[in-house]
Image 1 (spheres, helix red, strand yellow):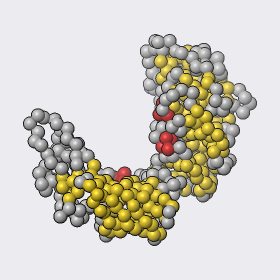
Image 2 (image 1 turned 180 degrees about the vertical axis):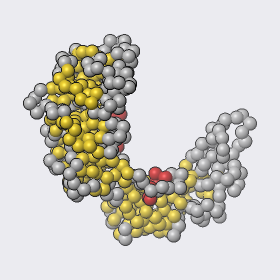
Image 3 (image 1 turned 45 degrees about the horizontal axis):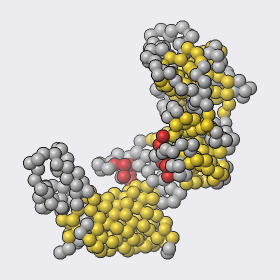
Image 4 (image 1 turned 120 degrees about the vertical axis):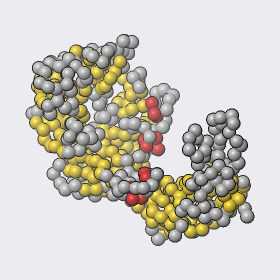
Length: 462
């Protein structure tokens, strides 16, 4: 009988630990990715609303950009962004001149917001990784920590103040033009990021009875009105929003909700409006008139746009330890337009069947070839199966061996998808038989398909 050892790394926690041997998995073991398997893969959404302009809703999902009709939910177009955008924070944004900005691994990418076609790229000015860069909410500025700021419009490096050693930045406006700084977390100043000029951020309104001290924190937003005047919006823990001019003079005050700190954020394409979020609601606020235009029960500021609110609804429960890979437990996102019925973002799913043969090529690997049915479409399959290391743990069973396969799926010579398959063998002992022979064989699936964000699923024996 041929055996496929599953090698595992040993972390020697005690000098008295015995010498463990590789787990031996026979090639005819039902856990081997051989023969027939069937299951479902489902899109694993982590969607974020970027902007809503002219009834077009822009949604980022991993490194995929989707455009929907905001009122009806009809998907208008999609585009693949640089792979790094799936991992970077604040890495994609809509710029008011109709450009989508994406921070890639080694350069900045600029896409036409109507066609989603790539317009141009721009190199970072210093040699570092994409993870060090963030994009402002208005997508006009890319900033590197607190040291460098770069215009995404013309590529020039923006002047940036160097704060004294006793001051540090605690927050900033979404366009990164204004910062809140402090020396002791007890008093705060608002400063311009270019030259450090500014004013004391202490509240100019009387205390609200029974509310938290207004000096404990402050948040900030910068807004340019339709009449081209600029305003700074300061919110305090007592629920008061102060609208100030650039010298710090208070123009208006508004209580959004007594004793509840609010966050506010500018909106693409909306000069006089901002979104706000409280512990119990979010919505739209007209800064010029001081009126709340829309309210919604969502508490997430990140996904409020001018046409509505995107939020994740509860997924079905799952008993699997890897519940995020359970096809029945994937996140579901709904969009609530302010003036239209609610609609749900589609979760693409596939029915997958495999009929494959695993041929052992070494002590810890095998070639996998065969056929697959993807929603009834016949594909050919090729790839590798191997044993993957597992670590000796300080408590519980000393290792968790598993089998891992990487497969490619072809329609003729066209590679239509790739997938990683992972089978965690159920350990029962450190000596043979080391894993359960009665546990149901199953492979978790990470599915990669062009134009679709991450998909996950599970295959078992039919």
